[in-house]
Amino acid sequence: MSESTGLFVVVLAGGISHERDVSLRSGRRVADALARAGHRVELRDPDAGLLPFLSEARPDVVFPALHGSSGEDGTLLELLSALGVPTVGSTGPAARRAWSKPVASSIVAGAGVTVPASIVLSHESFRELGAASVLRVIREALPGALVVKPASGGSAQGVTIVEDPSDLPRAMVDAFTYADAAVVEQRIVGTEVSVGIVETDGTARALTAVEIVPSAGVYSFQARYNAGETTFFAPCRLEADAAARATEAAIAAHGALGLRDLSRVDLIVDEAGTPWFLEANVLPGLTETSLMPLAIEASGTEATTVYDALVRSAARRGA
Image 1 (cartoon, rainbow, N blue to C red):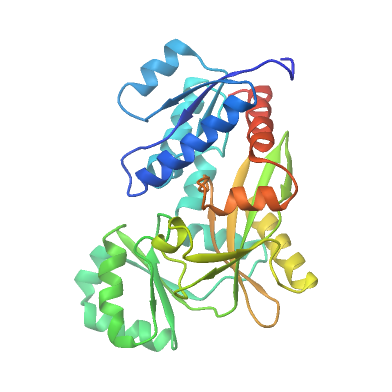
Image 2: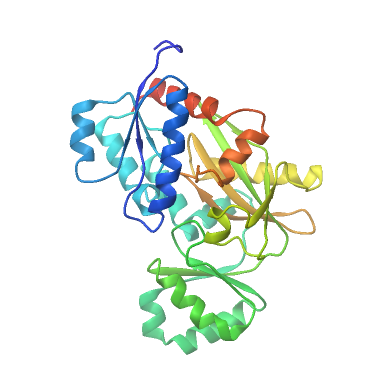
């Protein structure tokens, strides 16, 4: 494969998850960038016609720009591998590890990265054991401000910061709207940063860490995708040592989870400079307001260059 030869790349976007609209925006930007790099690109939705199409068309590479369960729970990635199609992104098993926030936190903690104390509750157990009793135990075990979030999913959907214990029941209901299990964890106060990882031909490098300052104080779904609602600093304003520790933690999380090609690791850095792992995203948002493109630009390169390198690396690697 000559580096000057364009590839036939199928970009996947859309899906039926809560993040469909975000995925469509990501997919269009990826497709446009790859077309500028000289590739023949087709943008497709992961619908019932996708697998037959891929079996017949045999693209050189598939680039999933899917968010939520459509692409991040590992199912589609595993099917693409079984189909023998080279794919940008992590393997199915690695994606499943990152998709489950409790599993990811446990694995990353085992790699020496600090994670918030938490309790995981299935919706079924919450009902069977009695909401009042369960919430009483939670408040005693995790005093202070809390963060309640679905055990899987992205884009901060179903996430609530609970300052007043009386708001905890409502937060649980919101989390269960998006997943069958919820994570209740201690809220870590500090600087929120995101570290993008790009890996080509087996070598992973961290992009410039991006600091996130939402105007409303919470990096919600609206703050993520509505221009002007969040201020970003790239590079982040952390002291050099703290920024380096955040980058090291992100690389450690990426490696511990077995991620590949690209990921984004979200962290809170406290006043002591300790980075706390929040979650890892195997298919991070690539929209005009997303963190990954901002980090790419702040690192002195262009999205077109990065996406081109990723599809060529995937093509060399094969299925």
